Length: 266
Image (tube, rainbow, N blue to C red):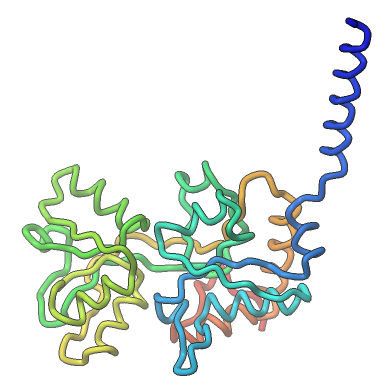
């Protein structure tokens, strides 16, 4: 009986090891399916939004579309908010995230990042009519922020250190912008491009960047443990930085070039 048990255990182990050895990784799975599931927030113009015919558009959308085209893949859009981008990877709802995902040490502990494909200036924005130029000027003010974003983390940490301001959290960027447009919020913490969208939606409440929080590299997010997928995406990013296509997409929607150190020859 003991010999049979040992033999059975050995066979089970061999099968397990054999299965591991031949298991396709995520890049193989994507290419075999001829489809890539991309998690993108379609409520944060100009990076992701819906046009009049309910078609996804924006800088992240166009980046994703170019990637899929070059790889010969169909896109399956996985709608997300700032707070659900990383969970979408961890729960295998999406293959990659292309959604204003800034690179931070905290996030790098739970997901892997590609090389940067764009950049984001993180700011506190406010009504142009308000004279605010520094963090001290924000004392006693309430700043709206989208829950789970890097801006949320930055404000939370600064508030703990005696920032002197209040934080109002919204579930996503769309509801935060609506609060600013309708007069519920006079200050928002988000990207500089989203700050400028407030005045587009309501010219009577034009916002402008007031205080710089930081400048982040934006990268694609990938589930931990998929080095071949990361390497293939990095190859694609390097090629399209060099040929100027990623800069052209960014400038089309954001009205400015990528940072000089990121730009390739056009």
